[in-house]
Length: 95
Image (cartoon, one colour):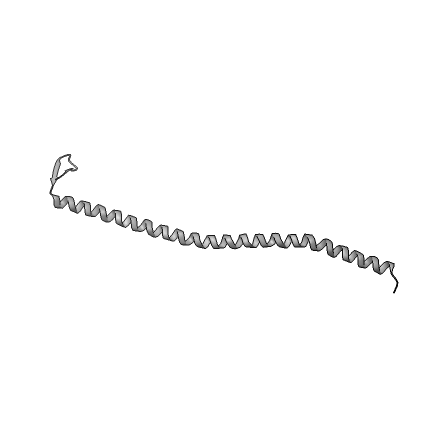
């Protein structure tokens, strides 16, 4: 038996069926909360996957830009040297 104190402060004893109904109601509330939490977690995981894909793409672009900058650091001085050599050759060698 379950002892419940009502609004007036009096004790009331409930039968086992009433107690079972209260327990079932509490279990249903817990189950619905569990489902809501599960759905929320699934939604967050899906969003995380999309965000991770975008971040991975940004990292790939950043690494690619570092490679391009490194290439320009080598290519620009080589082109400048070739252009300087061509200008020197034009000024000092007669055709």
